Length: 306
Image 1: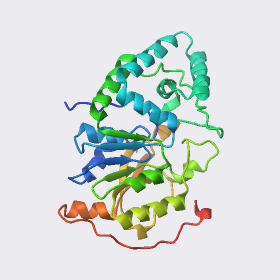
Image 2 (image 1 turned 90 degrees about the vertical axis):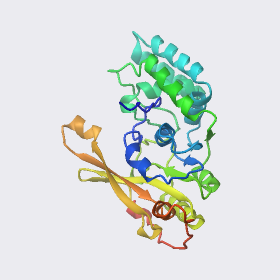
Image 3 (image 1 turned 135 degrees about the horizontal axis):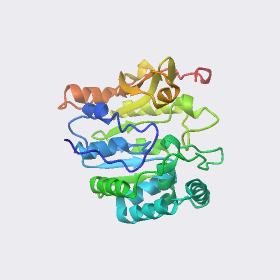
Image 4 (image 1 turned 90 degrees about the horizontal axis):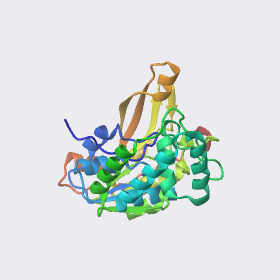
């Protein structure tokens, strides 16, 4: 039986279960795998587990989350022990203890508290209010991942990424500007339709047209990237389909029955889209040929369509 890929950070929308469909589209030679919207860093972890590349760059605009990743990778024993302490302290008074830790996190942004909140919150679904405060409720049916399992996952991920990983808390555009021809970027940005809601699932959204401009800049520089963006579940679609002028190949991945559909007793199947960049397609077709640089223009999508 193959070894299970470790994941210490539970995150709704994580590409943990889709990694097996994404990794086969990696080129044979990668200098650094870059995740500008890292979240749970599921693709970097899966890539390290499969020895797809030896260097990683993870970034997220959520500073506390990246502080948590710094702790997991560089001081795994310490944060595993702190999680165990918090987990045991909650017993017998879980709801009140969760509220206390949530308040303390919003005051201090201590990443140790964030790990506990992620392990306990409803459906691992992160929510922030307009003030940037973590405001998701706890799942009162669960105690959160058991400390032994959490320690095992933390130590395993640290072993995979320690000494190989750059950790940043920058605007995604700064990270994209650092990429080189031999790097591969994997992007899982927040869907436009999700970011525009009054109850944000993400710490910060992105401007859709600015994002399209950044993709075109990557094309002009011959940078390879894989993008998870839009999708659909039943008759409902998420995100705006990206312009064909960007020259990307779109594929739909069957992500199975959605958790929301299950709760509602429906059979809706979720399909998530991934896009392969032009430069990446050239590498996959003929790895010995350097990607060509193209100049193309597209018409920005009007805000009324979002």
